[in-house]
Length: 245
Image 1 (tube, rainbow, N blue to C red):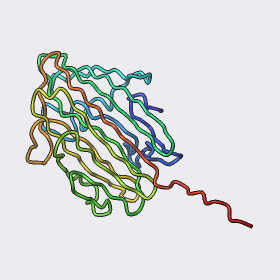
Image 2 (image 1 turned 180 degrees about the horizontal axis):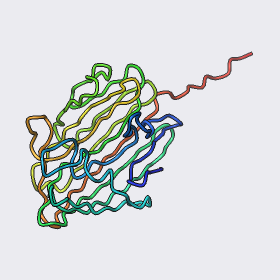
Image 3 (image 1 turned 45 degrees about the horizontal axis):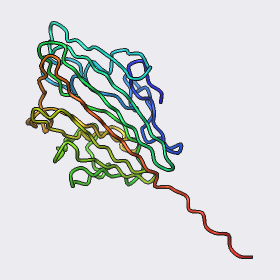
């Protein structure tokens, strides 16, 4: 696996197929593709949060695993101070592959507010669809550049993506569950012919926007998140026996 200096996974393949759309620069600035974490927050939130998708994705770390970062709020936007440790593991088998991302967030300040998320860009083909909690979503029907929120029935419910080349399932484990935990999947794309983002977002009860509200961690309290992506090829070649001469 190859990462940027801020810990973004650059690409992830199965049998030379890009399951994750490779990280690339966006015309006019910014980037698309890859996989990264959104800590302490996912998406735009009112103060004390200030950076969309959080400071984690812009903070440099050693590329050696596990990635370790201390994230601190500014005086103007004081959401707290946290330590984050993230490990990435992959298991490769014939025609399938698993990526496991384990992240621990620990509060270093008296309190810390967090609404973390996980942000993979999945490659797609024509006729790709997503299944979340019994709802099937045709990628071509997604509104352009506008995220839709789909709440999970339980935090461990997997989400599935089917393409003409591979199938993906993604599951989330969250612990400890000492306070109520809500999980919603944000589904979004600005290039529906190339990729779709299926983004777990974690917090307390769902807000008016359909996304979880921030959790409050007290000093030394930890939140453990495990995101497991399993990809399986749907283009396995079939070898026919030689015909008799």
